[in-house]
Length: 173
Image (cartoon, rainbow, N blue to C red):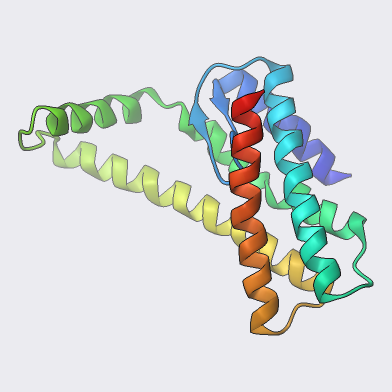
């Protein structure tokens, strides 16, 4: 039940803060309606659940879809939190300065305090991503009783495929 609340809350965050979740690991700045945000999140959860369930069935025929669905729903919580920080005016300004300097082929003229802000922001987002992946790993391990390296290879393949497929579906709708 908590996962459903996370999904709805994350969709509201996407709508309210103007961020889109156009892949299982992605948060981008883009104004969306609540319905669009909810649709993106449902697609991400369904695709991730299906591919992890297929991997789970290959590993352990007793894998239950509800366990995998819970993994997909709950593991996205950190990415929803990242949405709270993604549409940040100060970070956008610093990023624009860096991008402009690259396009003009001139050395970046970003102050050390701005660079520290950008590095701190990046570190926090990387921690959110790492936490999402950690929740997926431990949830999948528990749901399917994964132990061997082959199980983790299948898990990694399912994650990569879920990212590509969900991104493609969201792009085409």
